[in-house]
Image 1: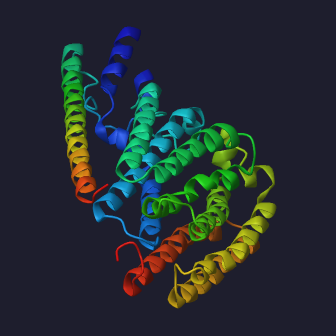
Image 2 (image 1 turned 45 degrees about the vertical axis):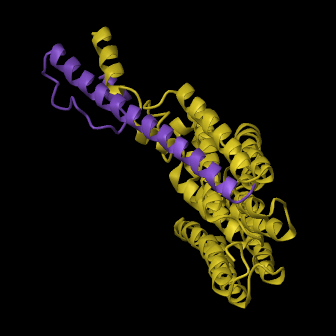
Image 3 (image 1 turned 180 degrees about the vertical axis):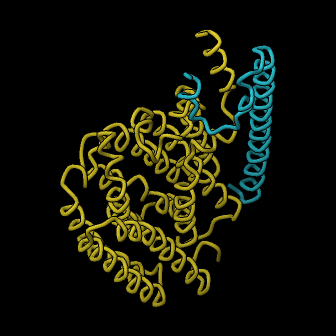
Length: 68
Length: 305
């Protein structure tokens, strides 16, 4: 009941049909979801860092070629 | 039972996704900021390398998004009680407040430093001023204290064309101040139109928006006054060399339509005209800057030549 009241996340509900599932199964699915989210965040950070490196490289090249 | 519930709740959160952090940047607000910032770059006299122009616009976008994230961190208590904002990442529990604050501060510093290193420090200083104004002056000081919150705080949303302009010229000029004034005077009727049909939301959250404090009638009169003041200000770019006759004609027609919207809102007894005016206000600003840029690109004289 408490969980339902606090569930405003709008995230896909992995336990929508888990009301009768054993606690172990709930934990396993939740852990899988957590791992998916962590992976997506890690990839986003990796992408951001690579983009930052490329951005600074390009800025340096442009400013040097422009004689700044 | 309690333990299981808590575990379940924690596991459900599973940390924020990348999309939650993007939502913190208020992408819809960012799009208008990017557009007006780009307008400043295009309209400014002088030359800037297209890549550096893109970097300038990127920094404006990131800076605006960062201040939005800090705003969401500070306003998480009132966001939770307003229908329009209750599903934002912090009140819905998807992002921790401290994470949002750290994210906003990091991106703020990043955007200002990159702007300074890649473009120039005048533009970087204006960007820092914009972020600081939005966070400290609007969000923390004015928003919960005075019905003039969005009148003064609107300056933060009006800076982007000045930043874009400064990215090209390295200075603040009369023409860029006109672009600032255009958005500054457009902000009150735009936001008050929204506040009129979201009145109950702001009342519940205790935010002293003009319709909540002064009443709907007084707000509608002020909206009309701002649209009338906006008429000559919107036409002014044609007289300082950053727009031509096509813009002047479009600004006059759109300005009269905006005044017409305000008159309809003043006479109305329901929310419909306010909703229409809110929608039209976005189109109004978009078209003014689009025509200004189109005229400049068509007839030359801007940063790209």
